[in-house]
Each structure stands twice: as structure tokens, then as C-alpha cells.
Length: 171
Image (cartoon, rainbow, N blue to C red; front, top):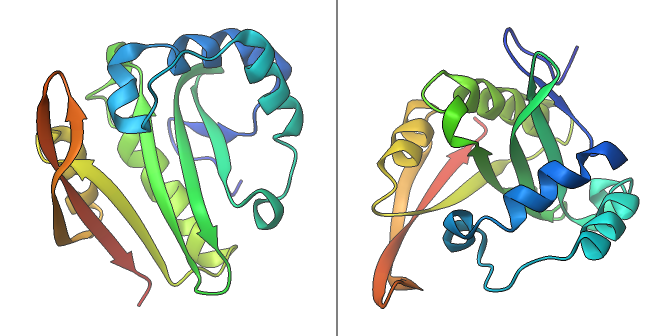
């Protein structure tokens, strides 16, 4: 299976994911990395799920649920999909109680293979705040290269944070 690895399964959004998505999207701890400043209603998220059947070429994004033993444990996204220039942004989120168990690494490796072999992308990029050591380590481990720093890019908790731009080119 293309979107499956040893310990995880990546799958499309389902109507029963509404509660999970509601909790993730409205968790203020995640707002910094998702550029969110307001909560999402269940109605809006239900509409998002209904429309999530759109092909990545149409929607320009792909959100997949990361499952372990059929339990949703996180989300991985391809965003800003640009088929002309063959690139996309990538982001991964694992719920705290499932972190440091290798799930993010498996999900990232699986989506990298999918992006390069199925979507025929030339490159993936990730934007990571400079204090997010776990994400920096994860992306470096998967051969992403630091290519730049956006100074004072994220304003949160009355302070500015730098955002590091990482890139992986399909060789």
C-alpha cells in the first residue's frame, strides 16, 4: 500500500474525523504553526471534510490523517501545491501523547515517496520556527536542507520568532 508503512496508515478525511479535526484545529498550542488566530466551528470543518474529496490538482492541497492501529494520531499536509513548478509545502502534526515514537518520521517518509513518485514533484519545503527543535531534527533527518531564515517572521506571545525554510530536492 502506497500510503502505509510499518506503524502508520495515511488516509483521506472521513466524516467521523470531525471531532478529531475540531480538537486539533481549535487547540491554541497549534495555532502558531498553522497561522491560525481564530477558532473553527464544527460547521466550517464539516464543510471542509465534505470538500476534501477534491483532487490535489484542483484544491492545491492534501490533508491526510495519520493513524496508528486505526486511531487518529496526527495530520500531515501538502499545501501550496504548484504543479507547474513541481513543488509543495509539507507539514506534519502529531498529538503530544504519540510524539517521540517515530510516527512523524514514518509519515514524513511516506509522503515524501508519494510526492516524488506519484505527484512527480521536484521539491518539497517546510517552514519551521527556530525554537521547534523536534521538527528541525525530523526534517534534517529526512535530508531537508536549511536554505534560509525569515527573521522575526512569527509573532506569538508578545515576541517574534524566526522561521527557518527547509527544502528537499528530488535528485
